[in-house]
Amino acid sequence: MTRTAQLMNARTTPKGRVLISGASIAGPTLAYWLTRYGYAVTVVERAGAVRSGGYPIDVRGTALEVVRRMGILPRLRDAHIDLRRLTFLDGNGTGVASVHPHAVTGGVEGRDLEVRRGDLTDALYAAVHDDVEFLFNDSIDTLVQSGDGVDVTFRGGGQRTFDLVLGADGMHSRTRELVFGPEERFHRYLGYCFAVFPMRNTFGLSHETVMWNTPGRAAALYAVGEDDEVHAFLNFAQLEPPFDAFADPAAQRDLVAAVFADAGWEIPGMLAAMYEADDVFFDGVSQIRMPRWSSGRVALSGDAAYAPSFLTGQGSSLALVGAYMLAGSLADRDHTAGFAAYEHDTREFVAANQGLVGAGGATLFPTTAQALEQRNDRLRKLDAIPSAEGRPAHSALTLPETPKLRDMG
Image 1 (cartoon, rainbow, N blue to C red):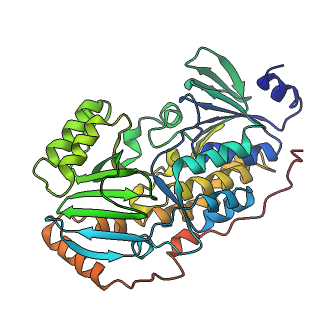
Image 2 (cartoon, rainbow, N blue to C red):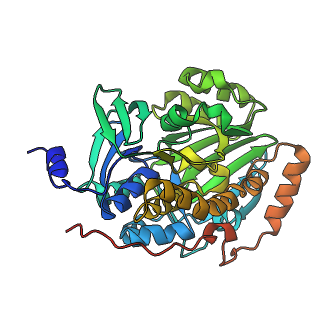
Image 3 (cartoon, one colour):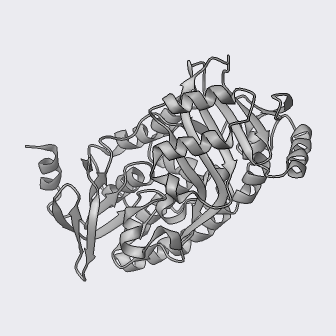
């Protein structure tokens, strides 16, 4: 008997059948909790497997309690990146200030986590894959809602009906587009674009980030350990989002190269590495802001509903907390009441963390010479050891207790 058949055989009387689109962070978190509340869960993911590797991400504040309740906190502690220094350089490559990273991010030493994105997604997948049906190399093509369910056709050709569909498929969510309309209605562009890619660590960097700045441009080399690889990061101010480049990898590379063509420091080598890299992630720096996160039997979570942008450092934490809150809201309510409770109980936390974007952009990426000098003056005056309290928005929500859980043994 196949794994799918075993799963479906074991769920002859589930509370409901739920399709989750996306197997990154919010999706597996939703699947973990919904399964324990008695739902039969299917996760569809367009990639061929859970995406390992990737750039480092943060887990802070309320999100730490989510991963603790999931039982994966010890594994993430073992994977924690001990980033010890963040050095800022001017346009000539001369040092401006060297600070503890938490002094800029608002993190708390010894409590908050920074891990490779793949370490978090691997931990989430390991926690749920025995209890959930995963459909890789597939995605949602169409959704048709009725009073009794949601009829779904998949791009791979299948058709199935679910009681609920939950979109956890990122900032450029297909689920959101199908149900709520074009992304442009909810996309709030913040004036920057960026590219991230791996390159060889020929710089002698270890457990540190070095960031070069001129007005409207930034380049960083991020060494998460003593590996022979670093994450290269290029960010630049752009008045309007370059929509023509978003679907064209060659155009993305050419745009970045043109912006940084006259830059010094290590940037010529970074540009050469960008053209050679197989894994270049390019996007605009944006948020998703929606007046509501559900419609009928469909709801959104994570970046699909409320991407905060990397300027806040809270994308992964919001995905974890939002998924926990959505699943808990459906534990002992019908979907109409559950979706309403999810929005009521979570929206203030989302708004507080999306509001961190102003400080993030101003601190890291000033767009004028005057603003850059003011930022550098602030950096020179920062305390060596940041506050032990972190930023209030990180812990602005106290998680409700989990409703009665289904025995997964």
